[in-house]
Image 1 (cartoon, one colour):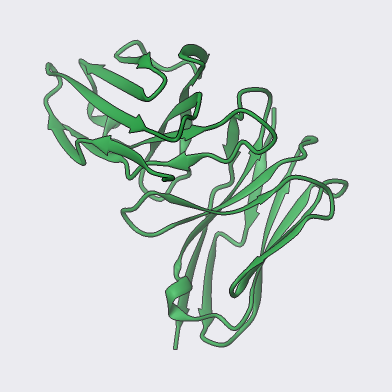
Image 2 (cartoon, each protein chain N blue to C red):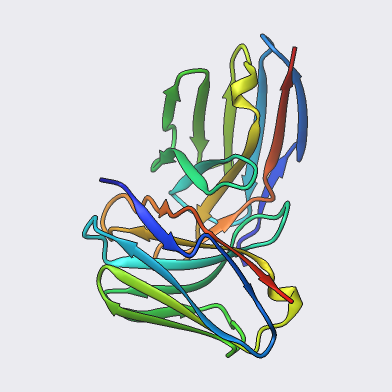
Length: 113
Length: 111
């Protein structure tokens, strides 16, 4: 099973709301990623967790707060977002080793009003 | 800082024709990935290229890697409409499998 699941599929939130995005994989992968993708642009890496530890933070604003409760689950907590944060948020996972192929989830389409 | 350049950025192809998408990158890397993305959808892994001279083929798509030239190509043979999508190459940079993506090539195949 090479599936990464993400919930919700769509999210509309106001600038004062707090919400969370969820990502789950059951492939035994020990690296998980959050990407942000704007329309007609490539994905941009936000965070990397390796063995449940935050390994890379690409200078992401603190209104985005990642969390990795266990090896299968990755959350992205959102607070006080701006309209320019509206984008497709993609989660991916991979297994450290010879081939670091990343498997992407279907994404959450976020709209900030 | 690693930079990844794809060209062309947009490609309008006639069905049955052949074409090549190019992916150049600026610093040494031995791992290159090709992904496909349909509009509004996620990324689908097409090829993983791990060494110099690697060549992989799947259906009408063939990818190759020349690490000395820092160049990968994605060749499309006898294009069909179903290949219409955006194709991204991505190169590993540093540890933790950090990927730097090219800008993407929007491919439109028409009759």
